[in-house]
Every structure is written in C-alpha cells, then in structure tokens.
Length: 180
Image (cartoon, rainbow, N blue to C red; front, side, top):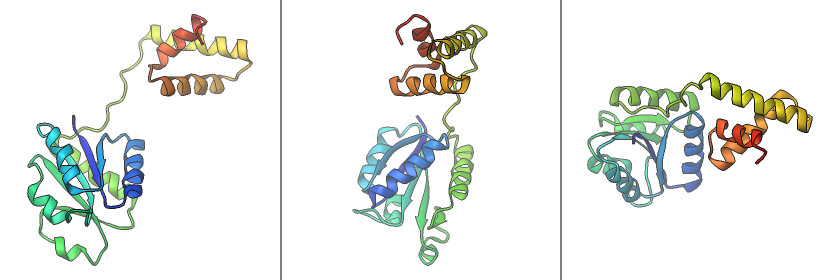
C-alpha cells in the first residue's frame, strides 16, 4: 500500500493534516507524534514506499535525523517556518512553509506521488447498468414511501453506505428488499 505518513509533534496538527489529505483522496497510512513511530509505520510497509510528511521536529527527533534513517523508497516533505528553511537547503528534502497552503501541499504531494509511483486513492469502478438501475429504483422507492426528494434519497443512501461500510448498491438492495 502506498500513501502518506503524517508525523508532527502536535497530535491536533496530525489530525488536521490527515483529514485534509483524506478529503483530497490521498491515502493516509498513519499518523505519529514521534519520529520512531513514523519509522515503524514506514518499515511495516517498506516495500511499497510513500511520503513522510513531517514537522521540523517531533517529540523524539528532528526532521533531519528522521531523513537520515528513513527507508529509501520514502520521499520526505518537511513543514517549517521560513527562517528554518535555510537549515534544509540542499538536503534533498522538500520543504513547505508554515502556515500551510492546502493547494501547495496537495500539489507537492501529487508531484512526489507521480514521481515515486505513489498512487492517489483510486476511484471506485464505474457502476454497471444493472447497479445504476438498482440504485435508481431504491431512490424512487424512498421518494415514494418516505416523501423524499431525489437528492434527499441519494444523501440518505450515501450516509447509510458510509456508516455501514457497504457499497451504495448494497444499501440500495437492502432498501428494495425491505431491510432498510
């Protein structure tokens, strides 16, 4: 599995970055507040590679120290202040300034993923005509039975799908079979 490991001293920053990446379709392999934890995650998936996205310092090591011992098939992006940037010039690490610009972050990760073969999360396969028909029939049933609009019926089915972890077509089948 390929993707991004987020490592920051501040766990709330890890969470925010992770949510930002996930909402953009980037696979987040794990989050860590310590460099050792980030290395553990990276070594667990060593053959696949990815990107280490980290702050200037974690609770147990700096980004420079982490860079020296990271697996070779992991690229590294360091988030730092403009004054810290001079320390990393010519280091081989990609640096992004704090405060983070979401567009710059995603563009940088996309560039590294394309170079290193780290894919973005894949889109689900196209639905077959039968699956589209089942979903449409389930929406129609919800609209008729529950007096919903088409967008409301679709949102209802999507939410059920996300909450249950089932594919949208499976939720539609349950609606048609009277289970939902």
